[in-house]
Length: 529
Image 1: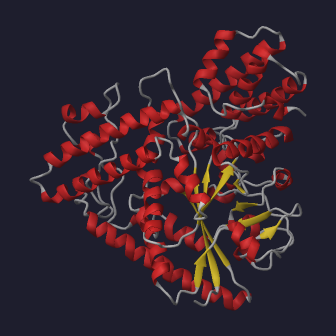
Image 2 (image 1 turned 90 degrees about the vertical axis):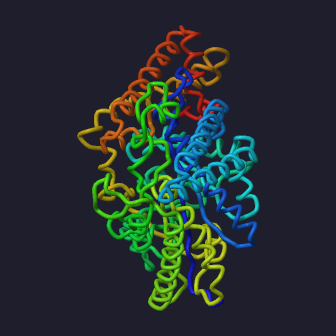
């Protein structure tokens, strides 16, 4: 095999921390349960089957600290297991309901088989699928990287100590779950600003990812553009997104997921079927919602009621064709780049993990077929690689200062700072300063005050999640996002006053510790200035 270049696949798996133990079920908790069933377990299945078939593969994957804490939480594990069992029960009913309808029955069989497979993997890891990802990392197939502790948008934080805390807490939490320190990080929303790399260096991190223009507008201008990493002056490496592979997968118009044979996301039996039939599988409020069982394909630009039946065989074949096309395009792209650059390029494909399976149902099969296609082509001119492997192979790279950037719309910070959400930052930066203040004036707290300081840190972190201003901008679930930010700010300020006045309310604190229990081993001293 004549290797002319390298391909790096980076999947960013993240969800905001949503946990509501005081309610029997909660709509926003479904974000996690859907992602486990539709993305994380199918990806684990793909990876384990590749190993079983002796197919080599490599990719990098973020498991954000907020996601990792939810996946490790016993309450959420128990609730997910109940959800999965109910879905399996529904899938058996669907086998019976569709048995005389050949247009839908094969799809019902597919769902039943998929859900049983999910249950088998879930039980294999005793309900904690972090062990599955850890195993894949330990045998060298994936490189798990961390993220900002609660996906905080670092460029809009004004207190450097608080920025450091987002990184430090994330690295310690990673070590707890995966048994070693992380080597790389995904900055939340791929958002970089000057000086962040120094903080990463101090935490022992070796690399991070950037949007394309973060590298293209670096100073001095990088010789190889986005097709080789650069070193920040701190020595931390930066890998940039390749826009060609982004367009092929992300684009709603020209991307693979829009193919007419793929499953239609927006038509679900939760809305299509008789209410009394579907009611046992809805939340306790009885409101119709998505179940995840969908029987129609995209079909074309037509109304939902005109969508045609989904054909699993057609869709699987199309995923294979698209994977082969993706590999073919990489071969030609890398051949061309190798000629004009005079060195082996690296093409970095960066995606939200939840695209694969949740939004694009066939996405995990697409990834499966990419690695199988690469393995089958003995004349292939490129191979897969992780950033760490690349840096070991090519340790000498250009030194340059990346430009401030993000991977949000328009490429900078507007998604997270605009007229819909700008009101939050006055409060977020104020409580950030207050956290540093109470940590620095209580350096050796014990007892109830120690617990209150740790919980104050949790409330600050949860308020800082970039998901809330993002939701406000996009206009989905805005009421929930605003409520979460306001609650965490209120909780923090209440604890702040109680700590300052030595009047910590034990019942108030215990309730917060029960509900907002992210980072059980957090140490508030990370905020000491």
